Length: 512
View 1: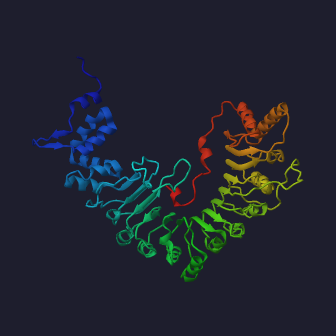
View 2: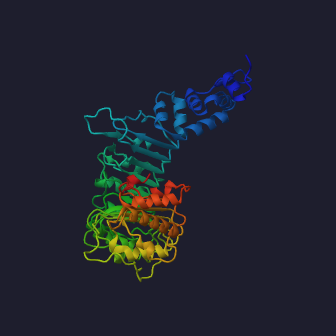
View 3: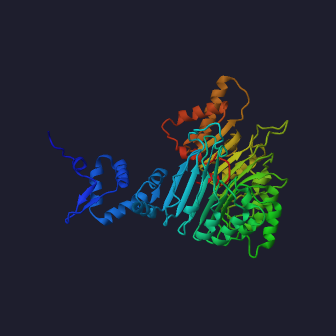
């Protein structure tokens, strides 16, 4: 039989996971490491196994390499590993990142020291198989033994299903907050989207008082009990907090009390705010957010427009507003955003029915608004309203000013008069145009085909770099799409541009 000329195959067939030193001592690679090596290297397993066993430093390097980030499968092997090796592997773990399903039980790890752990991330995925369907899906974990002094990040989150719904299951945990406050002074990120049994607002206050390096705080829909009473006072007074993600925003009384008790400017360092709140309550906070760069809100109207307050927040880069009731976005509201010269992303979604007034002439050209607009840096614009009738002039103004616009999404009726009303190219950098439907009066089939071709040519002229035209609704828009694609048969769309507008609800659960 001919011998193999492949050195990897030869060594794989000859090498064993052990080596004999000059003194006759046999060094054997532990089976846990061998298993990982075999899985990763396949046919080259013997080569790396032999190299690993040649020296203690190589062995130490392998341990640190493979155990730096621990999965659930790796953690499950720890309890059955001999004590000395088990503690050695646990001491090498810097990150635990696991996903658990309903009724899944974590391995018994309470007697193992994770002395170098820096990041703990647990995601509960309700879409994994449920083996006891007669019970509501959920999972409970105990985390106190993970609260070590080296810890800088804790994330307990829910995975979204295909519809972006996070509420199908519940992740619960024992009250680890006292251990966190006592042991984890280096903590920088705390995201909790789980129910913490027996935890109170006092526990959260103690964490805020002890973890003075905390920069990112996220509190999900199951943590309402933690923010009762005077917890918000401690939140806005925290010296280093730069990101706050709170599913249920504070009440008006909590905001007023917190601002009165603040010994220094409240939320002075905050650059990122994500909150579900009433608009009338939010107006008390906005004047204090002088350094905010990212604002993401789910709002109840509350009889107050927040747009006049937003006009003074010139540091904003990302603005995402979603109204859960019948707020009607007007042209005057949109013009309040004109001074935001650093704004790059504006996403708006409302539930209003924005139809043209009766007996209105919708055949004439659109005139831009006369107010000066400084949205030169805008790259992403998404307007979610039924017809965008009341903001047609403002959309044209923004299109003329925002020369770097790359993504335009209109979740309603798109009016091609935006392009017909401009002699110059409107969207020189646009990559994706995503309307819902196109307003078009009924006409004979042959005229419809001609009109679709004319609009496709209009799109090509005003958006020469367009990679994708996607009408999400039925009707005449699909004819325009087919005509446009016929003009650009060889153009491959970059699908990343279609993922700008997230379908998932707001809140820290969205932050992964």
